[in-house]
Length: 369
Image (cartoon, rainbow, N blue to C red; front, side, top):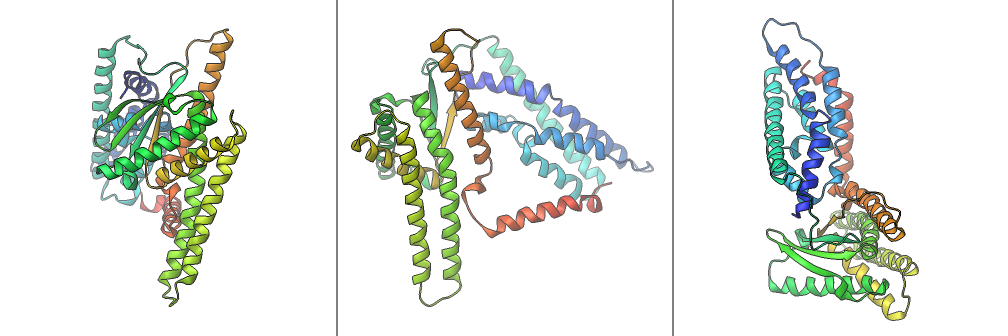
């Protein structure tokens, strides 16, 4: 994690956890549950406390954080208990999996303790950093750090994987850089991480914007591809003697994917600085390899320099505008990526979503109230 990311994370906790009184909302609900758990006490409704807490959790903007920051937020004991995903957890405690009011109160108390400990850790880090806000030396104010995370089916477990993904990422970098009239050497490697193999690249804002455009549209390609592949699998499962129909459906899936890749490459090329045949072919390989990387479960994460004070210098204003556009694109990508089911298709998903809706409609029948 870059120093600036750690500093930003403590700022985020200060603004979105402490100042928005997430703990107070948990405490209010816990207090009402404790009252109801006491023998001989008249049961009091806690609908208002519940709504206030769930609204605060739902509106916690986790999509402002990088993948590394999210992992650190979880390690601190806060991440699991805030954000849209935590809403279902609290609802399970109150309505779906509840045994009694005392148990619900105990589980909420555990969340309060975990968040409180996480805030103490953040405060300690924040105090240690003090006013230190030095820029990360490897990243210029007109550059973006891109983390390439080799995970799932895009993991690197041996030198053969390493060679293949190195070749593909060379092609990705070369094609996109050429479109911006830049050499592939402009995509610099500044570090690597442990665990899942992570390579840290630094690119200029123009190249970063092009990569983001491909990533955003890759979601649509992957989702449509998964839908057609599912139809093919169901066709085979119907025990039809001849698999020709299923094979034709799979061929159609590949055709649609390749056509979509060509459309993305063509659109990006039209906005590029170089439009010769070599650049066109290189860009086509870039898009294809990047879509394959994402479809296999690889991930990209981004660190964009923070906005500086307003300036009247035209060059600085252009940089500021570029960074703001990148931030907007990044927010959209993170919203899509927050639900990994976006990149897969299964009828179980529709059934699950319907069940969740039914549960919400019937909460009052199963609540601890």
